[in-house]
Length: 505
Image (cartoon, rainbow, N blue to C red; front, side, top):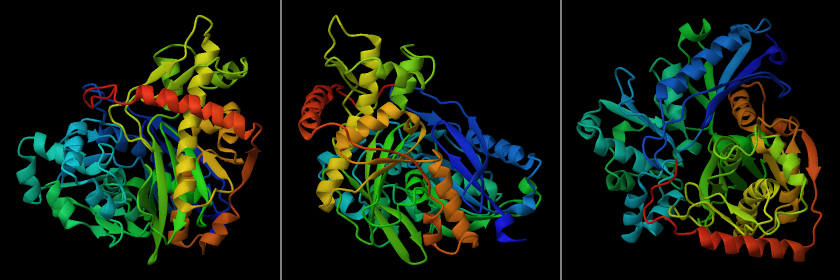
């Protein structure tokens, strides 16, 4: 079969649902299916998923794709996977039964343990190895928690009865019928257990977190062979040839393949990544260093800033306050007023990420007067997303010593024109929106297409990237400084609010 007639199936497993894309050789999305699964909040600040429910969204998504009249399994050349990062599953090696729900990246249950580790002065030691910081966000403390709290789990893990992994590993294990227990470098680099310089699981870190090394998956290059699907799923075995953590996948899908190029994904949170090429910058100014991807023996590093609450604030306006019925209303409401009338909204529902890293911060709405209207609050919520992004952009420019030329954007909230114009104004940078908002899934498709030979080089991928709209700054530097000064004042009010890292469900 000619390569032009082949498809890539991309599985984009996210925090609230799973998206599956069928992508052709021109990088076009021919079909998209999306399935949600339940969110569980068993205690304040705890967030869990049912791993089997996640798998069910993938299994039924496959059935939908194969039911399309123009799709035959023979035309699917390969599968690419991208996933919510840091979320972990521990399951039985023989049966595949999870011993506990997946602990989600948003979960703050290990805040106090992380505070203890930082108090012991281990922060710099961990950062030097992993490029990360000690925070409940990352996987290691979640795995340790499961081993500590599920009866008999630690001993079973020592005996090799239990294995663990991030969601990519869980899905690959399920797709291959338990034959492949693997992950890629981008996901491994987000666990707090992986040395990003030597590119291997770090024994000293494993000892510190008391995690038996035999539990962990084999780490492979992001572009390459991860296993073959069980024939029962597609009627034939299909190769899995590309795996990337969701934010690295979005950077890849945006065509940010050169050092200095940068993207932001407006998802549940906001995640800014800058390609730093072969140079791994030390994590500083509230930023993280991670592996972007490995192709062959070539490692591409990234700087990352993580904003915990991005588009989720719009969901909160809808579901908790009832100020809107659908997300699209926020753009119209924000444009009805000239400004927020002095209102600032810091959406620190689960603490603050980059550059502050305060798990004890909480959301705050300040500057309210008798004249504050619904429109002001909605506009302040959207602006709060952009302010957080602006802080991270400034940190990245400081670390690398250069202001980026542009910021490419994707994710659900990137459809909001008001938000992107305000973002351009705040950052003083052109904002480039891709024609597709499914850049995470496209990144997975691009990596799998490279892995199976549908495309021969990363350079070919740049030609597949299409910018739909550009937003350019329209305010002065003085206006920008005044806006940011108010924001930083509000952030200080939000910090350290909670006495314990209890989160908010």
